[in-house]
Length: 209
Image (cartoon, rainbow, N blue to C red; front, side):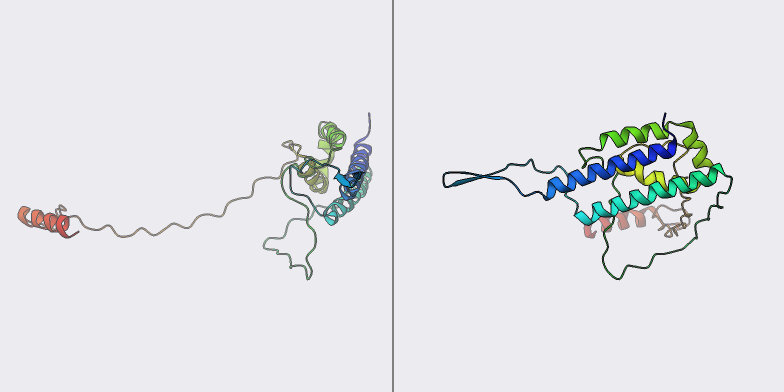
């Protein structure tokens, strides 16, 4: 049985290979066959999902390499009891917009698994990784590892176990809406209207709106 670091390294290697094959196939020009003077181009099935530009796949490969290196470093420090203290998130922190548009990875669940034909084997290794009790112990001791595994689960469309999910964000309390004052009715006893006055007012409202 592979260790959890070896399993992560295998997932990253398989995804690197699947991305390389997929990008090369998509960039390959269509074959054209000439029968006499009539050209016939190779038919390709239309993509089920919108195509992603090559910089997005390059960014994904870069993130995968960093994930494997970071995961291995955290695991080594966990084994030697030298884990860094997790940093608490800073409230109200906003990111500055980049001066130039940069590629971003999609946020949809399973965005890579539905596009890569070779995503099945790395997804199987990911399932095995999440079912390993050592992975849960490691993530509980090093929450930084959870920040590495959650995007991988999202990319391959694998559900996150409860020990990996982030706690729900507390919702801010809603401000109470001020209620508009209730309009008095003709039949309110405080008005002390005579019946003929009430009848005349209703007839006038019905006639003139």
